[in-house]
Amino acid sequence: MQGEFFYWGPLLYKNKVSQKLIDGLLKRGNESNIDFRSHLAGILKKESKFNMDDKQFFVNEIGNIMNDYAHTYEKYYGENLQDKVFQLEDLWINYMYPGDFNPLHVHTEDISFIIYLQIPQGLIDEHEKWKQVSSKSAGPGTVQFLYGQPSNQFINSRFFLPEVGDIYIFPAQLYHTVAPFKSDGVRISVAGNYNVVNKPI
Image (cartoon, rainbow, N blue to C red; front, side, top):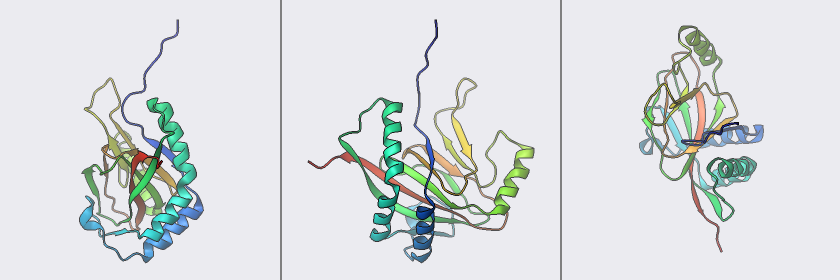
């Protein structure tokens, strides 16, 4: 007789966004002068908010990813989302310089995401050196997600050194943090929050 197992804990989803979205967000983010740092947890020198036109561009380009996420969500949680829509609330860009970091925090709304637009080669090299010292802990420039208490019997942490184009989607109340790095260059990401709301009648 074959046993069964049960999915448990939060859904942490990963995919790749298009080059068009990467280029568009970089251009629009670099043009934004709306300082958003006072609304965020990060200890970063620059974090800017996107305007309404930028948000509309994002919604138009991210549709396929969000549709796939919805199908994955339905399978993972056994919940039908046919009468729900994802409503984008916040969208901002993070410029992480050497020594900057994001302390352990959660977001508002229902679902959050992070998209990576630029990862410096120096950070990649720095991380490779770190892995030679410790492959079991989050190294420089990594994003780490944590849920529940630590135990030998289950996984309560996932950490990744992102690649350009990676998108992670996760429950907004899932704790996450970003470790600092020392090498030259700027690590650029875009983050935001969705609410899951009923479809208009």
